[in-house]
Image (cartoon, rainbow, N blue to C red; front, side, top):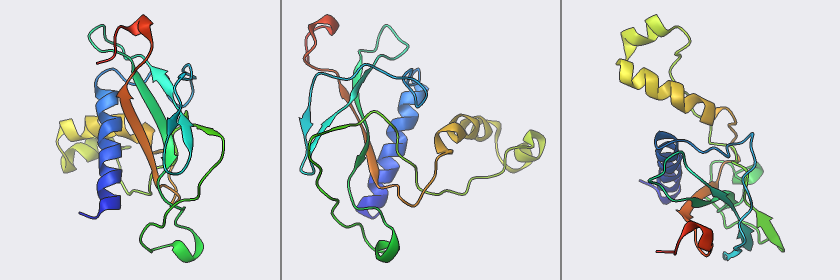
Amino acid sequence: MAPARRSLVNSVLVLLAAAAVGGDPAGPDQRAPLTSRTVRTKYGDVSGVIVTLDSKHLEPVEVFRGIPYASPPLGSLRFMPPVTGALWSGVKIADKFSPVCPQRLPDIANETAALKRMPKGRLEYLKRLLPHLQNQSEDCLYLNIYAPAQGNTSWGSPR
């Protein structure tokens, strides 16, 4: 599997795992508090958000959404391997999901017809997945990074 495709698959799997364990209460329509930590990447500095999951057994996580890892595949870059992205100055606030790559999913509008083509478990999975795939674009070379929240004593000691 190509590295860019592997990164995309890993990003989608992390997103689905977060949704399965209680969801992201600070989804696209809600704001979570910004972190106090700034992380330096080779492209520039980023600051994410702290997300508290709906479980007393899970500690808060620091989420960095929509971090570009390559230049947008537009114009002459379309259908070419990813090209190193542009550097930015200042701190990029990584609090919004970026578009996902275009995908063709099975039609599940008619549940009865869909159940003739797939098991009920897959249909339920697709129903949960579809809201996360509404914003699609060829400009989709972004990462969402989830890490244990660190450096805030109100959540206990970092591990």
